[in-house]
Length: 108
Image (cartoon, rainbow, N blue to C red; front, side):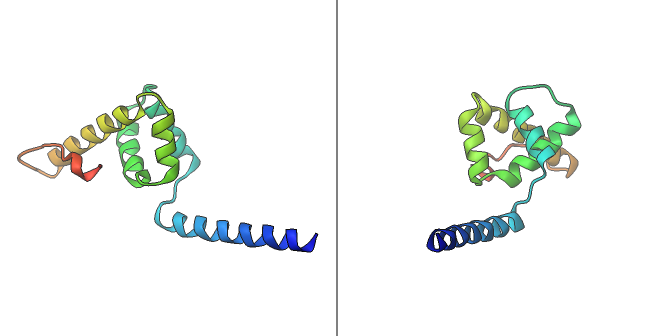
């Protein structure tokens, strides 16, 4: 029984360590994932929430959880791009950018 326990402890400790390292770079609150999921499912959200979702998506991109989410929810990738395009446009207007264009390469 002891070797099995040692293996579990080793596996658990390694798992916890990688989670902690990942969390240091990309930490998310449950309500942020809930809001992002709501948006990616096509449910209506406010303009303020849309801005928040864009910021969450930017932080979440590249994580396994985000990739699973957009691959399992029908149309989620397209909805994410629409949210990001709106965010990019809003940010370029707020910063006084002349072109106001959307740079897809930032998100792909």
